[in-house]
Length: 627
Image (cartoon, rainbow, N blue to C red; front, side, top):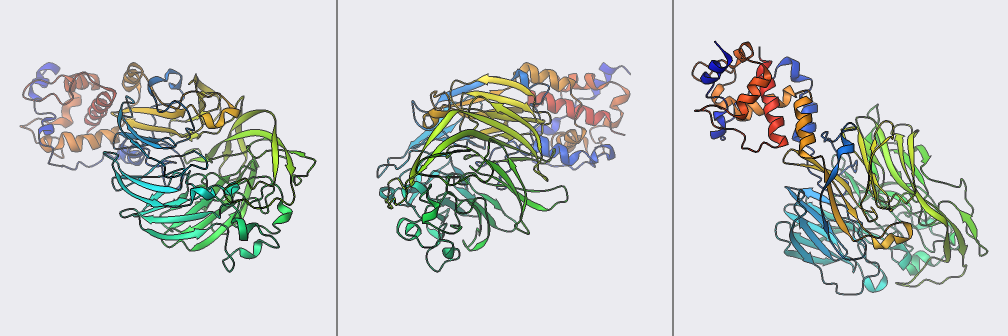
């Protein structure tokens, strides 16, 4: 029998598309069993970007593999949309259920993640003057979005419409309190923190009920008298009258198994006169660990005790396991180091400088002293990311030294400056992207950028790392070597999120471009969301060249074909799919699936996109290997 005659008998293939309510399970071939887990991770999961750092553990790692070191050079801009004319744009973007969410200081915007078309926009009208206009994004839970405001509120919106659901007060804007960080959402709880230390706040972490907005618990990051850690503030007025600082700037991390909540806590005040607040000044400059359910203190690790250089911890730590499966965390601070800590012993394992750092720096003096990094240096609000396949950490940093001058005797000011001195930057700000061994902290490679690296650094299973700088340069690195694979001038500083996601079979990369609040360190630009992707022609060519995924083809067969052709491939009117390979090759079978003969329906409408081509390839190759 000729191949074309066999195709005539083959009319029932994929008729199951008409019977989508039926599911047949087909045994997985032995040859595919080992790759099934990896295939599921690469294609069936990981396509969304659900929170600020993608996952609760803060790893900021994507299992997507379509963009690789081999094709990253072909990345091109898919769309962009101007979000505002001016202002701060440091948001961590989120993509869920085919919708992207972005925030400015006052607005929350829903967009199409493939075309940049705006679906809806909510504008928050401040009740009071904002101490510092900045916002770093939303949390999503149960069909709602949650965000802080720069006048001290937390807001819940309907994710589909942008309609306000509830509003609650977090802090007092008149005294310098506001919410800049993206909230963390888990198990019906929404958790936020107050900023900023320099305005004289007593930092707080507060949990709210996601459904009602009712406060559930709170924890003071600078302890009141009688609370744990209060004895680390001695002989001064700063923690009693001014609050002591300890604001939180960005996102948190959480282990849902232990319910441990990991909070990055900012600096004490006055910033530059540590002698006026003797002691370690807990819990400032610390990874503070609470029980997320109750707010009870569990443990802490302080990166810089009795800090006199504004070397606070602004970025969320990343939680991961080492090669021996021990639980670790990595935190990058404005002290310029990445600290790797054992979560069981709470001891430091490694401490690696990722920018220019003075070892054992002096305290500021009235005459002035140069110290690296300065108050605006080190790791800012985007901390390390973890690549589990390569067991590496990737982090961006700012290289910017300063002259510190102290002013002893400064008095606390509620809502005013409580720095206890001044600072002046030295030279031009530059930046670093650093890769570290996640177990030892050993440097694997490092790239020195001509401008600050403040935005997120994001690794993927495709063997690449996405990053950007404040000169507006979007970059793609090879994860292993650090080789630059692609550079694009986006026209505005990259200071916010760097995310990658999948939609309709295509992997996209998106980031914020344009950020007026950090013009000292790079290009201004208009606050815009930029989306990049591979051209369809590149994807289509690679689909035909790449090795088919048999395990994925098995899953597709179960849902598409098995209801008619059966678990053994022999159910449809005498057609034996296990014998197809005797009559045609994989290319011929793919051609037939694309344009089948009646009575088989056309399973993939034309024009065929990258997702359809990949599906056809994997199904055909699964059938061809059947024994």
